[in-house]
Length: 196
View 1 (spheres, rainbow, N blue to C red):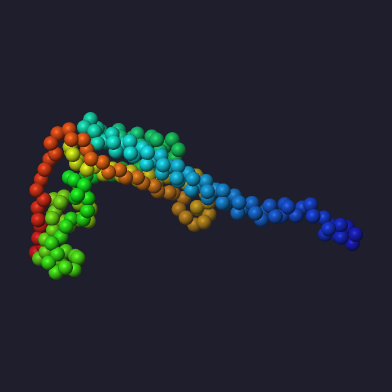
View 2: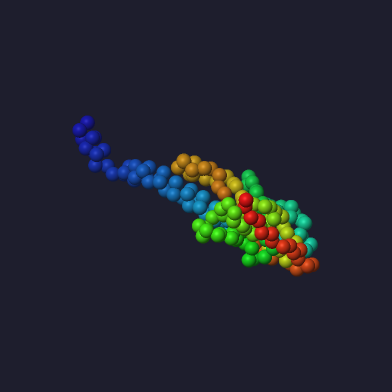
């Protein structure tokens, strides 16, 4: 019996199985995590490319009102790789590139905020000072259209859930292009609004 125990103690043939059992969970988690990261990068790359094409297409006069067909092309491209993806498109526009900034205020006391008795330029005409003065929609000729698509999909590997993260992932892409000058741009005067 002692001889057999000495033989088993000296036998090293099973040592690699134990080492492998210690390393394999970490290795599998690392590979799945990298797979998740690469999949996210791939989805983002496809979305960026499709959004650039969609932005150019929607800036044409022929497509000014065909936004749902353009959205559908982006969705179809993403659903080839992320079948359960959910899509949240958003379109807004500005009259010029110079207006893509918070509505300017006339700051009498120099504190950087809009206070009582101070005024601001109401770029989008809604009567409220906005940090994003865009208007909803594609806009018209010569307007600057901003098209954003948010995509939420289920991660392909369960590693995120094992680490306590959400099983869904969100990516987004935005394109900002000037619509074609197919007719005269609708112009408007920017009103000055003063607080009481």
